Length: 213
Image (cartoon, rainbow, N blue to C red; front, side, top):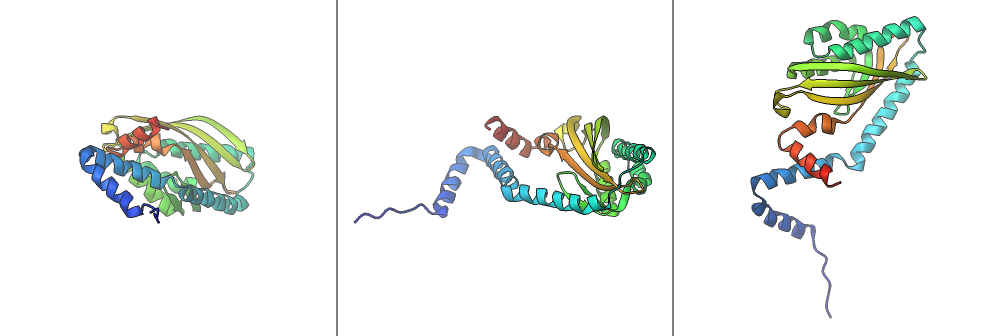
């Protein structure tokens, strides 16, 4: 009697290892990039980010306030000015407390940050890595107590795109407390085209995959 055998996961790994020498270092690094992209885009990861956003939105909506016309203008001016000034470490140090509440939350699609001090450290680190930065506010829309700020960002960093300027677009959902300070800052931004595509090796792998979707 003939028995059918099911290929084991080990045999699949052996085939991959057998192919890699033919690909060379470029192929090997490209394969790693593709595997990394696939691993980072699993439904589980996406669900975790969505769940975190919904949890933080629910938490901070309770504490958010419907602002008067005067305070609304002040809050939005402070926030948009802050977004436009985060290329400067000195500006961040000076304005962070005027813009973000002590218990604020921020997610820039790359990481979640809790509390003003943690957010400040993140912005300071980001500013330190950039050689140039410019952000234009394209539009602002309101929904309930929240606001959606649409922006265009142009920045440069030595380790990205050989230091050349990178242009990216995005939207930020923001909630304010009764004093006009940010409670929630959630970015909706394509970090793939805005950041990862410009990293050596990884960027090539991402572009390779995108062309075949």
